[in-house]
Length: 178
Image (cartoon, rainbow, N blue to C red; front, side, top):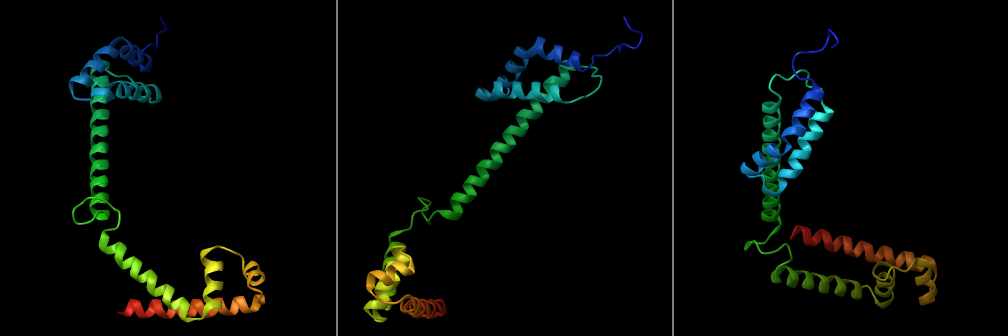
């Protein structure tokens, strides 16, 4: 035996203690309420002790139980905080009844009425400007394609789009003020 051999357990001694008492740790965690997570927690204990260098540990079994207990507490706290975040998000995004983030019937009706007003505004600009806006912004055609389709110049398309954008901007500003 080398003269410098330590008298207390080393890291490899901690790993050996873990391997000898793995079933005890698993039982301990299940008894403390870890349930199906007990296996995962035992694996986390192994990873923690295999990656760290705690130095000599006087009571390796107690050290392992304490590590397992702390990991279980951390997991419990993390799950609880996740539940709080989920509840807070649901509260912030659900309607008054807490049912769904889907729009209520009132909101859908208001959106449909607003869309009708926007369509009326576009129609009031004239059939060509309305058609150009729809083909470019709603149907996604390039301005050149819209010009070719309607038999007008590219500058006419650009001009009609500017008129439509200006009208929509003014309408938006008026509706924000109201």
